[in-house]
Structures are given as C-alpha cells and as structure tokens.
Length: 87
Image (cartoon, rainbow, N blue to C red; front, side, top):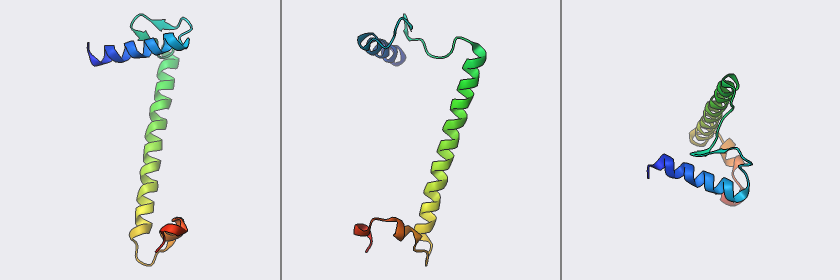
C-alpha cells in the first residue's frame, strides 16, 4: 500500500471511530479543504505565509540569542538563564 494511501486510511479510521467525520469523509480519506476554489486558495496562501513568517521569526530569535551568547562583554544571555545554570 503506498504511503499516501495508508495515511489516508489511517485518518479515515480515526475520523470514523471518533465520529469526527460527521459525513464529511470521502471514500479515500478525509475531504480536506474548502469546496470553493477561491476560499481554498485564499486560506492556503494565508497558511503558507503564516508558516514562513513564523519560521523566519524563530530563526531571527535564535540568531539573536546566539549573538548575545557569543558577544564578549554582553551579559544579556547570562541574565536570561535560570540562576541554577549561571556559573
């Protein structure tokens, strides 16, 4: 069984057993997305943009923390650590 088919079968069985489908399950698994093409594209674009924005914000945050950790004379990173971890 191809991976995608197995995944869809698993989702369908979960939905069927929990009653989450409420008649919305198709024969090949859960029926994802909006029926209206415009809304489907709109929410897909919003989802993609939000995911990329979150990934960029996390990366910038991590880079800023690393910069504070390696910059000599900058004790900001030390102040962020719990007191039990500060030497």
